[in-house]
Amino acid sequence: MSTLETLQSTAPATDKLASRVAFVTGGTRGIGAAVAHSLANQGASVAVGYSRNPASAEHFVADLRQATEPHGAAASAHRGNVGSAADCRSTIAEVIETHGRLDILVNNAGITMDCTVAEMTEEQWSTVLAVNLSGAFFLSPAARGRPELDIPPTGSASGESCCRQGRGWPTTAAVAYWLPVARPTAEWHPLSCCHRIESGPYRLL
Image (cartoon, rainbow, N blue to C red):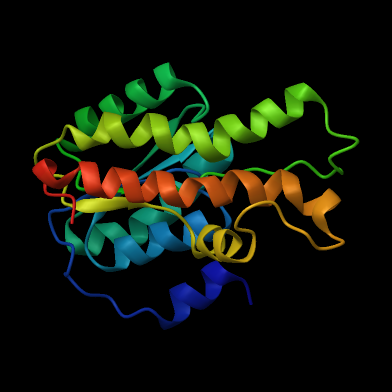
């Protein structure tokens, strides 16, 4: 059973997040999809971000609405590249225009390249950094200016785990394979901490 199927079958529906609006980047598949459904089951309106395959995104949102509509909430999909500062700003604005506010930002989007460091090109390296690290840097300030936003931007548990296990430069035999993944996510944790500290005036708890 997939993460999403497990969550859908076990998570009780509540109204804990009624009237809240959440935006989940990379929210149409994997961990992001599971988070989106969890938020929907708790009464939030949920916007999901995606970078390609509009048909698949719309199909996902149609399914997500089955969870949001019983709470009187909504669901939507928004296309953009989290590695682009301009796309991040426009997508946040689009979510707010669609739902009227933004309360919860989940910086979930992330990619990897299936190759060793020796095989990785400069373009591939830059792409991984842009999505996995710069995306959170671009999105969080864009959303932080919202006075109603009171839940910190966050990422998946896998990012936290990778940070703990890969702090600094990994020294295991797997370094050549895992470095392209571990390093950007390891750097994300202190970035997230900085956002939380600096966001006090915006009620980011």
